[in-house]
Image 1 (cartoon, protein in one colour):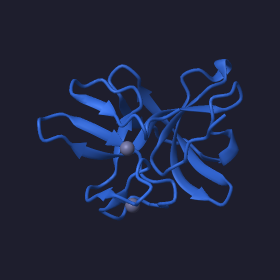
Image 2 (cartoon, rainbow, N blue to C red):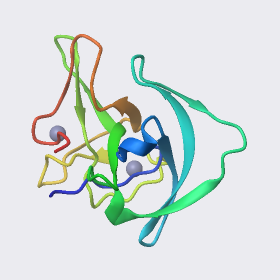
Image 3 (cartoon, protein in one colour):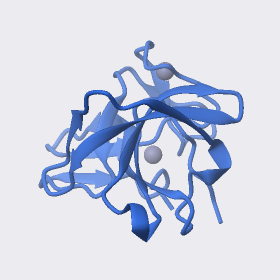
Length: 142
Ligand SMILES: [Zn+2]
Ligand SMILES: [Zn+2]
């Protein structure tokens, strides 16, 4: 099973049916674990809300895959390409680009030669809803 690079500010859903409706936002990555905090997430509108008094948990990075004891990605961190004719293609940042969202230029996962775009990273629902938006087929989540 292919794995997704875990990035700051992604939101993952608990894939265990007993924990249905539990959403976690990545707040830090530390070695082989991610620190996450539970958030409210409106699946229909793609809006996340911070919850008060939720503790930070630390989860091994290898659990961030959609097994029954794992997590599935619902909001990814992406690089926006604006098409000249209107519309947007969302790319994933290159996995080797270890980024805390502070820089303003991002190499794309689909480019072996390191082509990038000078835009900030944006939180984007994996299931795109707006007209004129699509994922880059090469960068797209498995
Ligand atoms: Zn791409
Ligand atoms: Zn960056």
